Image 1 (cartoon, rainbow, N blue to C red):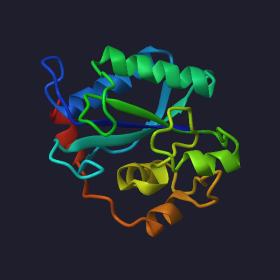
Image 2: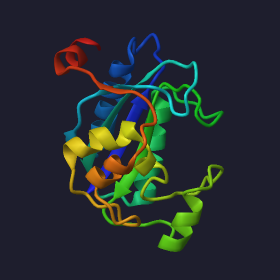
Image 3: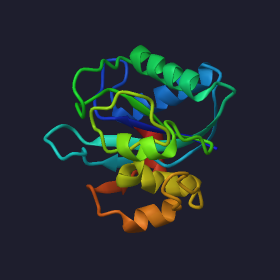
Image 4: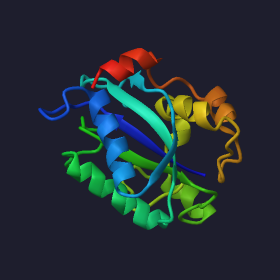
Length: 184
């Protein structure tokens, strides 16, 4: 199973709400030939780490693709660029963020190095599963909707177990489906 995380806390003339940005990202992913097998509800979340920037809209999607993990990540970065993302500073406000959360049971780099690199916030190498997904309510809560029994291939804990161990890293509120449909 392959899962991605989507988030937005900026808008544009073309996308007047962050919900519209996330929906545009989902559409762009499908247009690129990647199948969205399932998508969680949308959630309004505090920025992590806490700051005065706008709150995020977050979701998790299960996808199907024949692309390798590296090819998939490059495709997701191209979609971010198409939607107006520019990368400057870590944890800055952004129009779109699409993270590769996990790619089947693949671990990159190998397990021992993953454990070290997942703690290195300056690391720019590909890390799968995502190096901080297990620390983020805004990932784990929507992920739980889609795959509560998924087991982290390095930490050997399910999404439910990871969420139970997680000290809350900010407010996460589900957006009612009706509101999510109207806010485009």
